[in-house]
Image (cartoon, rainbow, N blue to C red; front, side, top):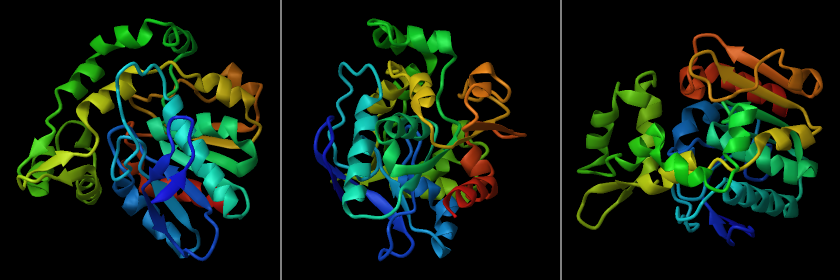
Length: 291
């Protein structure tokens, strides 16, 4: 556990620490909504040969005990502030500016945090960040937007998600080859299940990320990743998917022509679950950024 001081509430964040614990952290990686740090073990583990990588569990996920109350949430500022607190804690330990990276919601939270603490970063590497089209992003910041978003299909699907299984084995069997996990290798799914469930007193297991919290992350889009990206001068490398991307930033866009520090690439054949489908490309991008 890593102690943090966050405007969203002081406490601790759980993390997997890959590499030599005697050296400063080279890279912090932040997972997607509903996932956990363990999900990316197969992607990040090999990097430990030359880097120290910290993969954190965000508020409401994995083993992190920070309070996760979905009531009244309108944005991801709580997730941003947790990462700012983490960066401050790592700064107190010393070490050079590090690489901040993440997938989906974790990528967006990383972008928001980077705009608050640019001095702590050498660069960002973002995989499928959730960046809505600019008009849609503006509308999501309106006062009633989060309430209206509760009827969105992804929000409703999260609220209906089965939270309790007889065992981790039963959860694995239920997920294998289905829905969002259709393109995942079995090893990545096994890691997700290992880190994504908590044991219950009755012998069953329950999702560590409660369906109501996952749903609130889909609904609460009142943050502004466009402004964060515009403020940053650090190099930003974005890998987006060819199919069903959540990233409205596209190669050649006018916003990018005015900001040469931002590089966007589209990964042929990939979906939103790019890190599970192309771990080789993810590791290559992270190594290029960190060495």
